[in-house]
Length: 194
Length: 194
DNA sequence: GTCTATATCAAGATAGAC
DNA sequence: GTCTATCTTGATATAGAC
Image (tube, rainbow over all chains, first blue to last red):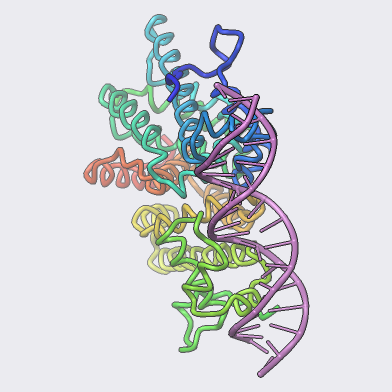
């Protein structure tokens, strides 16, 4: 198996992305454009320009391909988060509120693509293990340092709810309401326990 | 097309469920047991005891079958909610907190099955239209009557987040933490605007 | 490491008998 | 309204040449 790349293709220095990354990029485009149900080896073959043999050399099975997709996005999100935390620390801001802010603002890695991962996870729950790992670790860490841990948990849950709603196209919040809600979340997480 | 049934099979008086309901029950079992990716006409045929022709007579295509599944579960949830609201009204309790309570407690219609619907929705977003309809209507209605609407929105989002976490097996809350969080949510929704 | 060609299989859907 | 039989397509995966 080729060496695991831990950086997303776009952020790498090397002008020539690896075959793996080209294929993963193609797979992402397929899911975004056509939906998770149309993510087939053949579709990725067409989209990537590789031949079937070439694709299946890099990812011996479809499951391996999906695992690769999950691993790459988890990596990317992990980097984003660590960057935001580092910035907050350096500028003496609260890590907690910085994270809520970025979590709200960040374009959530293309809805359709995330839905695709979700769909894949429905079939193979173990695919989400890396995601679970990242999230649990992060939250335990953060909540432990919060002034009001239970309230912090609620704020995190609400952010999840917000992302979930986005993902499913359930936009029962107008832009104004959403802005107010996000501001309120930051406010809640910053408040000392009353 | 046969007349639409608007009640879930289990709650009907008729001892002989319709062919549609037998087939939908079988489909649910398949999704719960084997996952959404294994929901095929053939699997439903095996599980229901019907023949392929019989299944496809009642649901002319796989998409029709999934639509039927979504419609039935939306109906069931809708009934649960209306029941809870009615109870709250009759006993003079707050509808809002009653709903939060039931939303937290209710066994969420078998995780795997809901994940299946989600996965299906990833391929055909329009499948979630009925769900969207139910949720938006309910929330606008409720939030409008809340003392602190933005806080009410946050509480609803947090409940969504809770369900989402359950669905994905992301249980970063211990049972004790979860109990405290749920209690706190009810508390938040009951509080007058500070 | 990447290609072509092909084997194998399962899925959705149709046709027509009963 | 339900059955059996069949058609068609498209998917994963393998084998072996280059």
